[in-house]
Image (cartoon, rainbow, N blue to C red; front, top):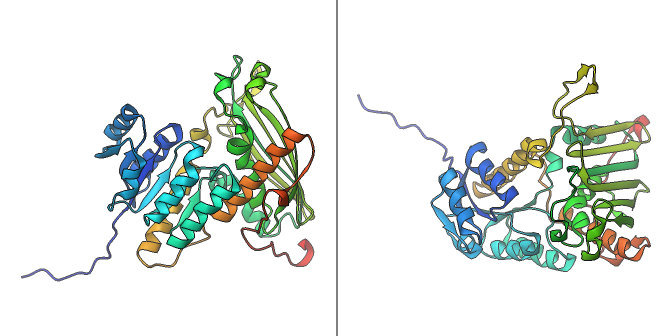
Amino acid sequence: MSYLQHPVTENRPVRVGLIGAGWIGKFHAESIAQRIPNARLEAIADPMLPTVEALANRLGVTKISTDPADVIADPDIDAVLIAAPARFHSGLIAEAAKAGKHVFCEKPGGRTVEELDEALDAAETADVVVQFGFNRRYASDFAAARKLIDEGAVGTPQLLRSLTRDPGSSAGIANPERIPPGTIFLETLIHDFDTLNWLNPGAVPVRVHAVADALVAPEAKTTGLLDTAVVTITYSNGAIAVAEANFNALYGYDVRGEVFGSAGMVAAGGPQASSATAYTAAGIGSATVRLNVDLFHDAYTAELAHFVDAVKNRRDGLKAAGAPGPGGADARNALTVALAALRSAESGTPVDVASIAELRPAEPELQLTGENA
């Protein structure tokens, strides 16, 4: 007896090269290597060689470098995951795209709209997948809120709210002088700006007013630190949104979103580690989350899984499944709001978004019918 021939569809993993092995880079590396079955961590690059060596040893990666160019030029790599400092993002996107690599990039996509546009133009010319790390879209409660909005549960959005309060301690912010100016807008609230844009589909921000100060570490204000901020955003559909942030929430990592509209309201997020609540002589309480990789563990993994699937489908000539991940228009819109907020905080006056860049909706306008319209 001889074996029969049985055709098997090739299921070659997407080979990913990591650029940047800091806090979030390490977590993303673990996701690629251990939590996403159709991906393989092919190489790691970071200027700090001991950090790269330790991560590579732990995850079984044989290709390491201190130069991102090695990862970008590697013919065995399908996609590049950029987790380097923000000042390198746009340049690395452009270089990777020109080398034919698909790109997942942490936020922000760039420091200016002009440099981000150059990177996105390179990606469009190369026809590669580009996705940005707006992970809240992949958190189960935020995704459920967006689904309800799409189904008309809130009707026309009128008031929106998003907040980020980073976990802190009674000692305050460690080394506040090392936080670059503008961080609260460009690297913290940019998540909230994207969330608000996403929860108000089809609308674009038109006016921004920001108030910010160093209330946690006032002694560091002279170095440019802003650790507390409130931003009001007016949208093209008339909706008004508020985003707020603080760098030192003693009770834990607190991220929330809310959309109120003509037919109702949806809310998502919170700092609780679970729904378990203790009722004791000391009062009523519940445990809270202290790290971003704990609060958004599954969301961080899901966004990368989505990206890997998109790359694999493109490589294998298959139709993309589901909605695309947050792409260039989303990154550009969020960055523009962040830059407008920074300018507003500096000037003390509202800023027209058009003075920063002309925006276009990242997706179609919300279509409502019947009593929810």
